[in-house]
Length: 337
Image (cartoon, rainbow, N blue to C red; front, side, top):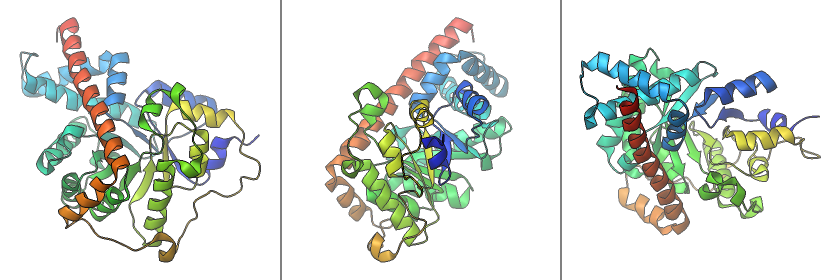
């Protein structure tokens, strides 16, 4: 039996939507899957550090040795440990991947170019201090006009690969490509349903906002020869995955991986939905927004669905970031760091 996973994996790179090494090892040992990339965000980090406090302890000890810090109570120490915990978790996951590990900046900084740039470089420097070359790291940046100007500097000046994430609008995809991002990540299914799979409504793919957005962006990129690759995220629906088959890359959580591995490929599935090339007529007119902040926000803010979904995801990650800070302080206390 050809599984649905095997069918879609012929046409897209498959990456893992978790930092948990045990998940990667499970799929590798039981199904022979070698993932291309693995991704993380504030929610994934919180879950990983809750399961593996030893990662935080190791990061804290590294920071103490590096900085000579004697106390573990200050905000500066906490912030450094967060950066090194991100990098240490990523380093552990990276050992079994074909390509890169993806680590996300603090979403609250995405409205500020300098904060985005500095936090991204903080993550990169943490990885490098742990012996990981920046070529194996992708920095995930929620797409705003300001953050994409930071991404431009990271890509062009620092040779740091960037992924424009939390993409819910065509305009975000356009400005991220103009910034030279290596990747973008459109969110396919509704984020609240991704967080709680039991609530998933399984909409018809032809009525699924994220499916239609992904198709539009992939057609646009391929028609105009744009090098930025699309790495779809926030997938929970079996039909959603099939409806965007042929996209450059998919990042899949264990929930959707298990669905795809347990089901056979649909009858008659021989070619993916998305073709390898498109005409400019099929893709629509090429636009530019990188040098026009007013035009970008006029278009983005006019899309109420995009604005609402972006803000929802941003708030979730901010809450998870705050939860991680509380978690780390508790780990410091319990382990006498």
